Image (cartoon, rainbow over all chains, first blue to last red):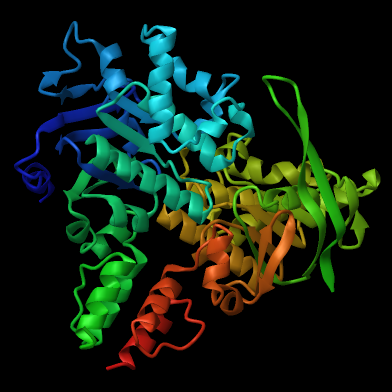
Length: 298
Length: 283
């Protein structure tokens, strides 16, 4: 069921940025310890799309995303970036890594420089930019990530949890990426910090037409932000579709250790009680609209 | 009876600026007065930096108060000879399960704490068996912890604390890194321990939904108690919570929106089934 969905739900007008073809990763291939991280995964992601990636612990999501910038090599299949096979001989992986930026879990532990500005300058300098050029890139990135100028000369270690996350994201933005992959960027943040960081990421996607891949354990968050959701289970891509379509499969999601947004459950129960609401509503705003309409208050 | 009693509790730490060496004192807790009743299920909410985790570390004697006192079952954490007994009374579970697992086999991991306490071998067996039952992980007793999911690892960490027969368990964001099933399993487990074994639970979390079934919700801000009440009382104060960088459960938020739009919705909606019922009454 899935393969067809995965390939056809991409909006036709979008340029394809990333394409995975029959991607397979086997650990300890050919030994008694052989185990599949994931198997035969194919998908296409368009420029500027916001993709939510969900799956239970150990579903293969982290391993999968590390193939998108060549940090890990597949044991089968390949990844095309902008139409080019990134695992073919002579492909410039270093350049790719500046285009496909990754922000890993708890990125604040990777901050190390004396000041916020210097920390963000590290990437461009490492790619061979001159000091002034790197400084300009860092300033642009910090502004985009919402880190106020008053913090630039501070040590990154004195910032709040949410601010540190922003600095880490700016570190990746300073390389001017076309794709941004974020692994649980809101984990451990309070509700305001959580909303803040996700709004910042979504705005970046819109403003700079950056393709976003957001790995998250929060169904409510992906329902709210993602254009399409990729669902992994036991190394297989089981769904890749719009939030409405994916979250209409509540039972299948629960079977694989996930769930639907809380609102989805409410809508289903209201519909079961005979209230003519749209069961595809999965955010507070959508729910409000359809409930008021169903009750004739609109 | 109070199991935890904080009296004018203060905790300061020094933040040193790397670039110029200037030092500033941060008051993580300021004159915190707070008591937690034995057998209760208490949720502590608060924005990052509000002092929640510092409070947890002081309960367990991982940090000592700068000023003031914290008593655990009447024992003062400042008295060094009481520390072991305090840690047996109030066990801790942290956010990242991977940092808490130490042994190669689940049962060894669960036995680690009580073994260190000098519990004799025969008794140890019984405790490990009981603790694994408590968290529904008996089937994994002889497995390697590395192969477990995040939720399962967290339950093993809770079993390790249970095997020390604590009266109280303090959990600092135990579900932050877990998938939905893992979160649900951990929550179910701590509620059962509270209901069936009368263990006092102090749950620190950023997920408002996790506080819905608590007996009491405490909101911290600037190292003090900013709000204290039942879930219904606390989540009725939407605007105040937002000012403190917090929110309300999704169902409460939707109830609030629907009420604003003119529906008749009673106060204190926290759960899905309550909202379904309230909406249907508007037909």
